[in-house]
Length: 278
Image 1: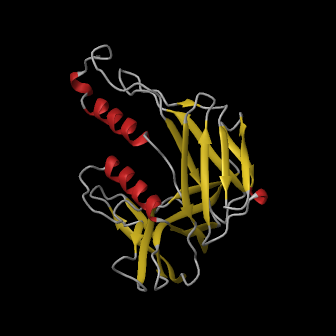
Image 2: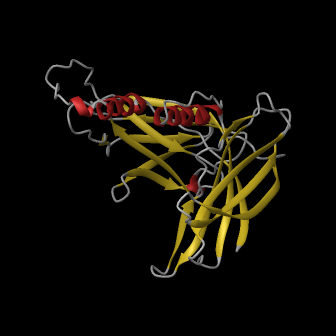
Image 3: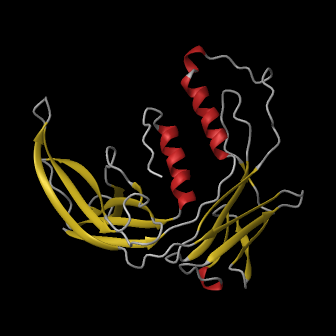
């Protein structure tokens, strides 16, 4: 068993109108016990809106943008937005602008990373327009990882039993990192396990459990201090673990919009959690 870590910049996020759709769909699911199709009775704004999804990072191998249009989430079936295949998608660093082209097999716009390298502390702009006149734009500055270092990476195993005397081992990966002082930093911390599946004969990559752990961080009140996170997985004692396997800690240095976007997603998935991490 080996352990490793990865530190990278991530990522600017631009997404519009998708949260409204997802939230309305959740309401329909919540009240399905008293189901009544009111598709013809509800008056809503059915005008399709552009939804743009894109991340950029110095560690990327390609620049990728997804473009679609919303559909009203009314009725018994919720359908994903329509893919937009004829948009004009450009990314610029202020001095150079490149166009991304649609790849039908992947249903996204893509271009080689080498045509416009992404570097820290630089601002990039994204513009998307369609033949019918729809247009959106966004800008972001890529954060820097300079001065941010891992200070701890520890692996431990503890035997536990359930109430039914089912014995299993809890595997835990603890990791800490040092915040770079004097600048605004946001983090997304994750961990994973990779191993060779003997029957499938392929490498499986599984996220570690972090259901009660904080994974998004801001240094607004902890400038220059240590941060910590944890990932876990359980395995029955009687079953042997595939060997070798690798536990990895992943730390993304992000911007505030990225953090706020994922905070909204987390709150939407768990309305009982009132914690704010941005």
